[in-house]
Amino acid sequence: MRKKITIPDVLQMKPAGRRITVLTSYDFPFTRLIDGGGIDIILVGDSAGVVFAGHDTTLPVTMDEMLYHVKAVRRADPRALVVADMPFMSCQTGIEDACRNCGRMIKEGGAEAVKIEGGSNMAHIIRAVSSIDIPVMAHIGLTPQSVHRMGGYKVQGRKEQAERIREDALAVQNAGAFAVVLEGIPAKLAAEISAELTIPTIGIGAGPACDGQVLVIHDILGLCEKYSPKFVKRYTDLAPLISGAVKQYVDEVRSGDFPTEEHSFS
Image: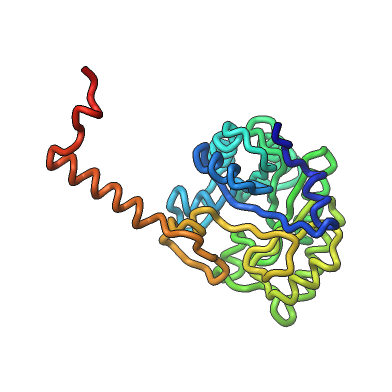
């Protein structure tokens, strides 16, 4: 019988020197495939707003939309730990709203942890949510929900910003986060933070020294046409295979080659 990955398992991976693997998923079939590949954590990301729903940013994503995706992922009964992204404005309006919305992700969605963007400015929220036994993965550095303040998806933590990122990392750890995503920061800074923190760091565009790595599933499969960040490695290119299959289907229907007797009932 397969052993379900839990928060204590993830916490033990850092001192054991085992790299933590994380990918996004938003639906039942992809979750079955991803989980079958041996992933440690499935992040139901608000990146669904971009790669799944076609928005330019993650900002329009709602709680109801995230709950829909989390439920779909949980129906696949993954061995991996399921972490749900908290969408923009689900936690920013205060502790009461944050606890209620995070609770919905656990109670209604079936998530096993939540992810909250923000550092020192969101430490009080992380502390409150953690205090009611909802595990929180923090997210600092390039935080996509802060795209307007940052003036775009730009690398964070260079020069004078580095100390602020370090302060954010310590703040979320002290607030009770069980792990922290480091996105879009210099590799040297990520290495220093990873060495200093006792909780695992999950990198995305933060170099090789983090305790784990996360990428968007559509990016590694070549299914996202909106952007291709430098930090993404494309492990396969499914887009031409899918387009080719659709073209063949269209051609066969129009030519009368499909369906045949093999695909018909007597």
